[in-house]
Length: 365
Ligand code: ATP
Image (tube, rainbow, N blue to C red; front, side):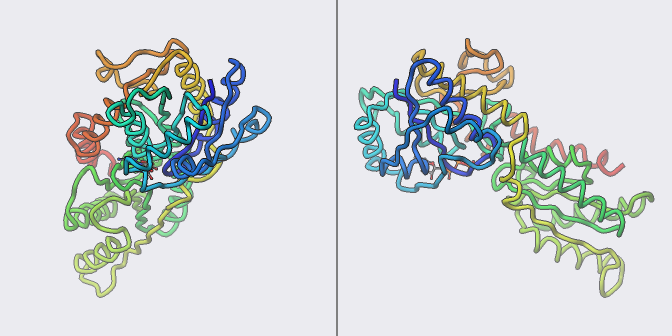
């Protein structure tokens, strides 16, 4: 086979491990890996490059993606996908590995849709890579572990200075539609509270919850620092939230200025970058291995999933014969489950929406 590999959407640490593994496994099995630069944009314009094991060896250690990534709005249109199929046919590519997030996997589904592509000979397989962990039916996507480690390391540093001054810190992390990173890193960093889009709080409720946490910490004695992790997708931008919290604290204390200092730290793209953690290297490598071997076996329109939740796999997908920790899940099923997760319809989404309200008192002890 000639196996095309592309990375699309937001980059995620560990994508390079997947590219490397796909490359070396393809070569070891006697197939030819071909890199496609700049995601779907590069696919449409034919930005192909040969990939060989020597070239990808050190990539494992690096964040970002050696194939570059891009957003390509044109790919929403059938004409762009037709152009992409023509490029693949012209290059003799008969297997395609798409490494990316929810949008990129949706692009892969449309690219390979028989209603649009007809009897198309190219087999397509997806590898979930997104620091947001917003793809359903896989416990983890590539990049999540590194991003969480980056946040926790930053929060540990912030906690030191916050404790020294008894300050309130609002630490904003990435997560437009999904607060997974905020929630998990709040636990791992020992934060006092988390504000995520799933909880669907109004501006007033967000302010109330921060102010309540500050008052509870002040009342309990001990460390006076307060650390709240906020996901970027909450109703109120973090900078505005700080102003509203300051104003409310001032009115609560009856002072013109609050005697409690609040600070905002926006971690932003720092969370996306950096060397992949050992686990993301492992995850990317194992998924890349499974993707190539499954393509060779004939898999098509599937996603490699890492330990899907037990109730999710009943009757859906199959365990990979190449790695017992991986499943192959139909792309259309994954994407429908992802929609339900992001729309708050799935049981997992409902659990995520309420669990931190239930835990709030525990956090503040
Ligand atoms: P991240 O999780 O970092 O946001 P992503 O893969 O979800 O990654 P998107 O920007 O949503 O990132 O999508 C990446 C690309 O996938 C888009 O620029 C577009 O080329 C393609 N894509 C997204 N949605 C669709 C769609 N509905 N139909 C066709 N192509 C799509």
